[in-house]
Length: 295
Image 1 (spheres, rainbow, N blue to C red):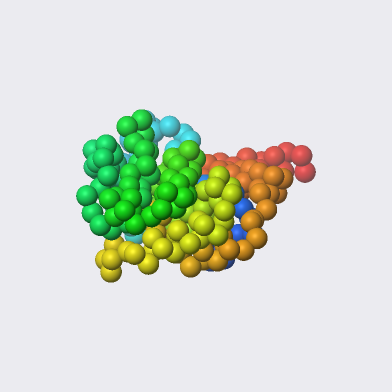
Image 2: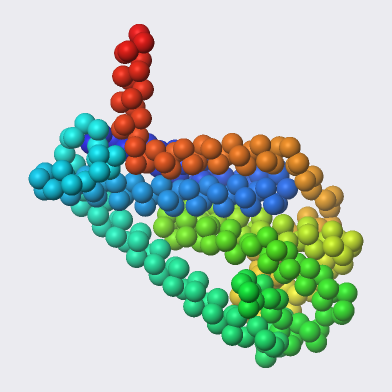
């Protein structure tokens, strides 16, 4: 093997880390798309690189068995994988797969529990509003929220949560959560993704109600009414101060041109790097052969 095997993962990890450090000058909808795509690609690249190295380490330990492994899954130079690298890759890949399985199991459990409670208001005084995705989901509100908010404020909350459902924001959040669980340097990216998703829903709700100030007041009111150890609620968490300030300011540009271009460019780059985690050796070898042939 050679260390170029880890280059695509290193590049996409560096990109994800950079995106998590500074806010993007885009509409929240495009920021969320960029962050979720990059986080998902980084998670796939990390697992893919680990699996690739483990397969080649197994071929190093049992050369005779390598004949039964597809050629694309083996290093192009047929060089052995050092024991230190192979064992570390096996341990980290097994841990990554275990984390992925546990995360998915937790998502399924939380979703089933939320759907089971979606038929009637939550019996709690805490102001809670949750978007429950799926055919049997909907907007789940608490009795405290229904009691404390006016009809106009409840309409603003409903529009916010409806935006989460309409755009399937749970998928964006899942990508960020998994990326952060697998790679701790991506926790800032996950935080920015959560804020972008909430800001996206805020802008949708502000457009639907036609009153940004109302939504800002409602958001602040719900946040201030939370108990000291609040249960999870999408409407009251994730950068409340920043969200209120944004709602009281000028609406962000929708980036009809720059947003799609950046999103597609980012997808091409991260997708190519992720694909290369399995075939970089072959790509480099082919490029060198081509240069020699036409040189």
